[in-house]
Image (tube, rainbow, N blue to C red; front, side):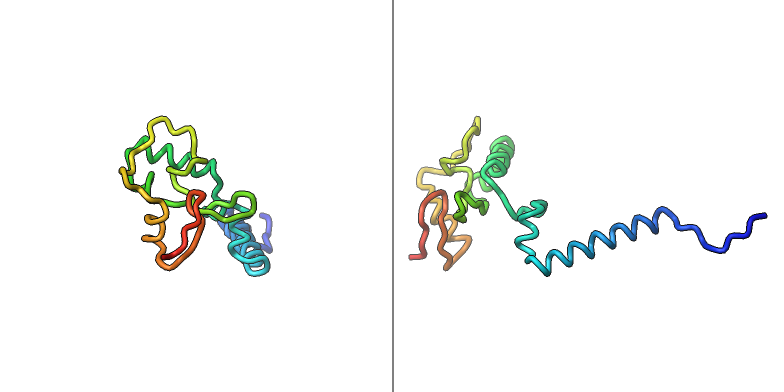
Length: 131
């Protein structure tokens, strides 16, 4: 009979150790370089949308007839080093086969300001300042 002095490590224990190391590294990076910068780098929590991401979201909204998502959801994107908010009605959002109608008097700035009172931003290429 073989006398074992140590105890074997189970696979579950190894997985937990690896997950713990990953979490520890994420915490160190988050606190050292800033959480927003970290999310933009790894791009898994929506921290860094681009126009292509918005186009894909608009195609899904159009195919599912989601007028609210198509007209009223604005995504934060960085274009040429400038931060802007765009939705599916922006001229940069192209390739939507069956775009939804947002209504005759649709105003992207007014819609965005209604969701973000007191904030100024560039929305769909227009400078939207609070009145």
